[in-house]
Image (cartoon, rainbow, N blue to C red; front, side, top):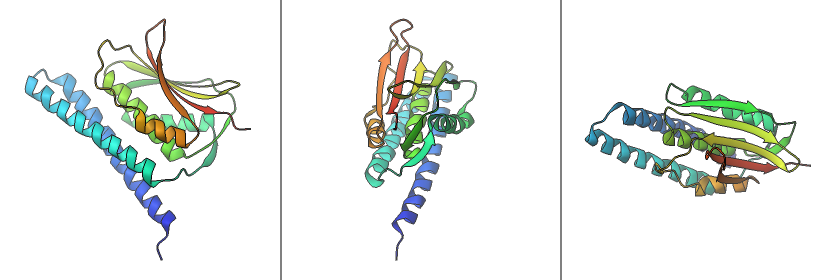
Length: 199
């Protein structure tokens, strides 16, 4: 007799492996884009980037359709550290990020793997838009909730930012909200993943 939970664990593992490969290929194409000035290479890189974005969107859609949220209890600081640990291996000279945690003790109940996939997507997409620029990840809490923020430099021209629809759906399935805004003083793009405080 088949074990549905075992099957889901196997699928989750494969999705995680494939997503890591997609992230590595995405970062490699960003690097190639900045190394070469050949128009044919640039056109080829753009096609590859488009295909990779579509593949990632498909992965996210499948994840949202196949899996019911698998809630776990952890603190906001623990989730922030998991986010940091999954991103650190992807950092290099052209993909840099700073980390700041000012969050007070707060407990979250959510599907950790699903939310980490959202946070990872936010970082890799920001890097795609901002190669060779530092982006900033932060954790904050207040009386209303827990906030995971990602700041990136202002872009006069959009460089193919990926639609947030699928990852917004994943966030919503776990009780979170995902939105982007602009800092009126610095004009930085700020993406915020917010969760209400649990009682």
